[in-house]
Structures are given as structure tokens and as C-alpha cells.
Length: 294
Image (cartoon, rainbow, N blue to C red; front, side, top):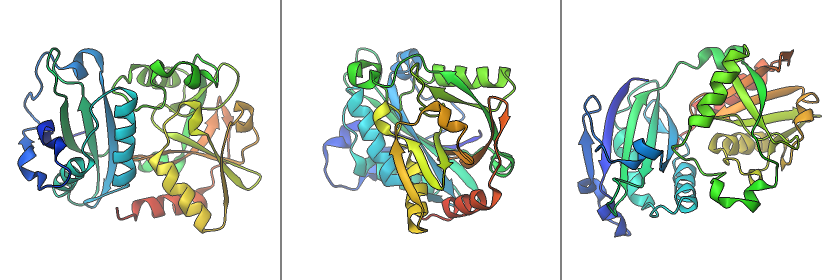
């Protein structure tokens, strides 16, 4: 991605409930260093983030993204972000986006080691070209996530369900998928339940119903998935959150990966087994997602 604009957020202003936050947003040059060597986001991945899709200058699902940022911060014992301040930052960065597709990243770090204050910044970059994934689909492989379905309730310190900066496992899973001749991965539990992709939610259509794994399994509650469910329900389709056995991948007559930047990418194969791509519904979903305002 080509970085185009960045802001540093002053967390000292976060105690203000309502204010003009423009004074707390400092424009950065995205081409020069901006973080200190002791920054814990770089040293330990100790922080949380969100990625917001932007189309023609309009950021999508800002409210749900900010709510999820706050949820992740709480799970990680980070200071609660002032959402009004962060919304002001998103509006400021969005003004620089222009036509086409972009991505805004929100980053909240524990800060510099030995200091009490967090570090917070927002970036704008050109989005990757996802046209082929939306049109032709993605091939996925299933990978063992290494824990059973009930582990989130037993081990909250694993931070499952938080969108943390510690993405090494997710990136390793994508590299493994590519080594196996696929484009992406789907995580499954050791006891055989479907979870999510490393950077996306999964949606299955089974017997006319649209199903996604329940967030209680310690996965991210996808903001794009929420939008897609709302659209499907408006058109009269049945939607559900369930504990989804991985074997249901064989029952599905269509499936998608859903994310804020890639949007709706149909799954064309699972572990080498082809799945029919529903081009009509995929085009409808992406048309809806691209046309959102707010």
C-alpha cells in the first residue's frame, strides 16, 4: 500500500467529553520516521488497531469500527479511547482520500516503554486492487488454530476476539496457504469448528440460509459481516450466528470472505475442492458495500 497521509493523536485530550479536537491532531509526514525506538507497538506488538474502508472519500462503518477499537482496548487493558476524538481524526483523514478506494488504519499502542501515556495515530493509504478477488474468488485451505471451541471462556489472557497488532500468526497462516497453492486460509478449532480467516469473516449459504460463526468463539465480530447481514435481512433472507462445524463447508452451496477492504470475495475452492461462485449475489453484495455512505 502507498501511504498518503497520517495524523498523530494526542491522548492528553481524551479526558474531554465533547470538544473541538482539531488541536489534538498533528499531521505527520508519512515518508519519515514518526515513532520512538521504545515504542511497544514495534517491540512487542502491544496495541490494537482497526482498518476502515474508504470509497470516494466516504469511510464505511465508522461507528462499529470505533466500538470494536474500544472493545479491543478493554480486552488488552489499554486506556479507553475517546471515540469523539477518534471520529474527528477519521473525518480529518477522510478529507484527504479523494476518489477511488482507500484504507484508514487506527492504531492505539501502549506507548513508549516506561511512560504512562499510550501512543495513537491514524494513517491513510491507497487500497490494494481487489477486483480479481471479488470477480474470480479466492481459494482457501483449512488450518488448525490450535485450540478447542471453548477456550476463549477459559483463557481470556489469550486476547481472542481482540484486534491486536500481534498479527504474526495471521500472516504466517496466509504464507502457509500460499505454500499449499491457495490464496487464503480458514482457521478451524481442534474439535472441528469453523472460526474465521486471518483477515476476514466467513459467510456460508447452506440450504438457503446465510450462516457465520458466532463471535462467542473468540473471533472478531466483522463490521462488513454486520453490514452484509443487514442487507440480506432487508431482502428477506435468513441469517444466523452459529457454532459452525468445519464439515459444513462441504454442505455450503456458496461461501464468501468478508472484510473492510476486500469486501465480499467469493470462495472458489476449499482444500482443493471447487465451490461454485454465485457471481450474481457477489456483485450485488459488493455493489451494496461500495455504495454505503457512513
